[in-house]
Image 1 (cartoon, rainbow, N blue to C red):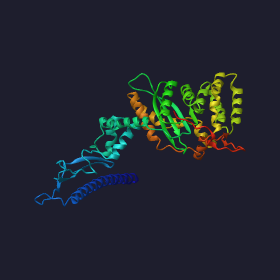
Image 2: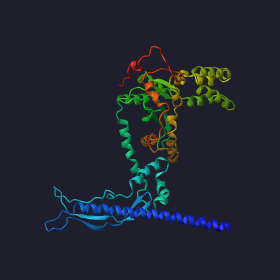
Image 3: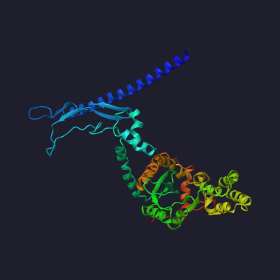
Image 4: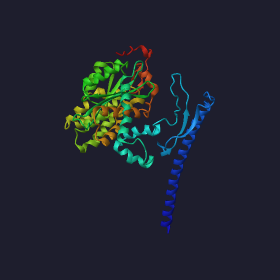
Length: 429
């Protein structure tokens, strides 16, 4: 008996929910019709005084148009828009027309629905799945869900990407930059796409996407092209660049940004070192590496490295060689504010947003072309930067930019205090 009552209650609740959807759907349709009528009536009222030679009004209501379907957030509604007969002539003799601002001609879906469709595509919904996925929400008669229409909506990204690559960077300073090369499969090509990405931190602590370019295996020439282009558009060299162990960027940075300091990514370094140790030793080695990575002082980090060397050098020299390679680059962060260390130790600033890009790649089994892959990566990162959080200790960034010295994360106090701006100004090309 209890089960029967429970099923009956569930059925009634379901019917109530359906009724709520119908009420919302019908309410939206009626409100839209009322708004369209008010718009047409207002237009007629504003021109009521205009008459022809016989004293007849030149602007009058003219019934309703043929039924049309419009896709809204609450579903697809059918309505008849009011018509206006406007017989006035302009100075050139052309017929004037009433055009609704709420419902322009040929509109088949609301702007909000049009905006969300490309976002769903970026999040992993393939073009052929839009209609079956959204029919339950927008109705079976929803317009604009065909693969061709979705592709047309995404075509405007190319214009946005072109404007992004040509924007002026003069007068804008960046304290830190994070760089990485992210690889993707291309369905119709054998070579993988290597996307060169750069994100910068401004003096106010906000992060900004600086570059998304096609590169060749993270080569030095590819990175030189990116850096020279940024300098050509007015970008000055940052104080510190954070990247992985790829040699291409560091070779390019030494030539284009010789004054910029280098910080290696600890996550990439840990992965490389652990890969050269037996699996049974990796948990213990990882704890030792974390001791270096999260040390409070440079001396503590160096002492942890000595202990690691004493334990693993004899039997696993390749692991030690991997750790020692470019060691000074790994510990540069100690010369910057401790509040910034969590941001400077790794390239997670880039890796985290690219999780969404990889999701899209799995859904489509790779982009159809290199251009489409770049556009997809750019648009996802461009959307993601709206949610990026500011750096901790943002108030210290102007000091770093001005050349103030820090030792083990603490600002260095000097007896003869000099102005931070004594350092020579960094120049753009």
